[in-house]
Image (cartoon, rainbow, N blue to C red):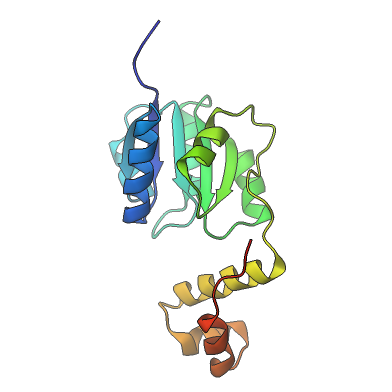
Length: 175
């Protein structure tokens, strides 16, 4: 019986989250290697890991591209997709590419481990957000895509700039 820790690749462009999650997963018995981008992970990986935790949206290549590459190397790699902007189409795509779990951020290490080690019967581990929460997340996604330019985000959303500013001042609705 091997006492070697199972290998896990963690890829997320949010450094603070990546460091925190890597530490928590290491504490739970995984041998974690973390990367800040899909490109870095693909360059450094010689063998596919036993487990992978991959962010969907990052600067550069998508987490779906990494999932495709991982399962091309080893279809047995159990992967969980993380995203701040969950949607049914991306969950379906991640599942088709071999993900055993799809979690919306913020999430914690216990939920990630449960998804990684689970039987795969529940791909959507997190609950569907409320309409107000989905709107809030979408507005913040568009704002981030616009480089935090409120005027440009308002134009893309079809809102008056002041209306968008009022929405941005509110706290996020409960999930």
